[in-house]
Length: 294
Ligand SMILES: C[S@@+](CC[C@H](N)C(=O)[O-])C[C@H]1O[C@@H](n2cnc3c(N)ncnc32)[C@H](O)[C@@H]1O
Image (cartoon, rainbow, N blue to C red; front, side, top):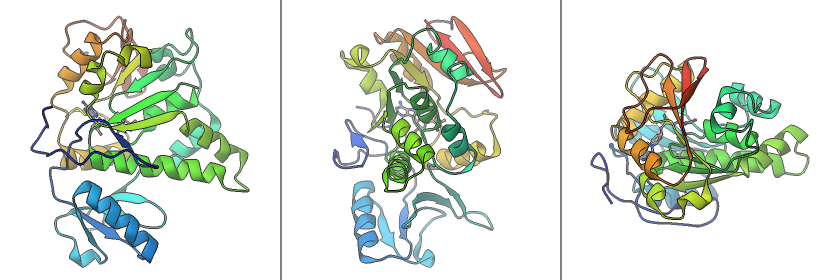
């Protein structure tokens, strides 16, 4: 399998709460240090296991970080850190707090543009394969609609960030005394299966059509117009794994699979992706649009 952008394949693994690796994942473009914060013995073991999987080195002091991009593991969470500016900027997967956590706790309506685009209004709870999982927001919104979601992410680092966010959400909703809202979010998150690997490989498997009713694609684009949070995240992702310059191939793999519905998230006002077929229709959603291929 072709490994993109100079990244080498990472060791395969499949256990515990970590993302399942079914095929080679993309290694970061830059070498990363893993900063273990307030490192007690348990955290240090976790940091070392994670560093081994990602091929990075563990440091316990900020001054030992080489480069201006790093991972930080604390008892609270795993974060991607940008140290290039005057103040460190951190990005992590979060399904519990902030505006997105609130949105998930409130429940997500089938009649929202994403729900309409995947056919959740007329076809109940379609099984979705999210081929560009990133930090899992779209996967979580789909899971909140009751869809089962296979979330595919080819960057091993991004997949670890997502796995950490999913684990924290599951834990918050299952500890004794968890609120009903947190329990609901944990149930939602339980519908997501994270796999680290290239979606083109997954889509080319003959059994893909039996596993999903809808493909969702949200590749990175140079001209994306997004909220401040997503802009910050995308800037960091671009430095980490580059741009998704092979997004057209991913669309062709989706259109060529036996999965009958393909949904592509695009910046509103931009043309549909160049593909062998034109979308059947689209759903506007604020600064984005969902193009639907039937
Ligand atoms: C724009 S982000 C997706 C954001 C996501 N929709 C969310 O809600 O958080 C695009 C992600 O897709 C991943 N990606 C791009 N092409 C892929 C492929 N062929 N297979 C798996 N992941 C891919 C990138 O590594 C990146 O993390």
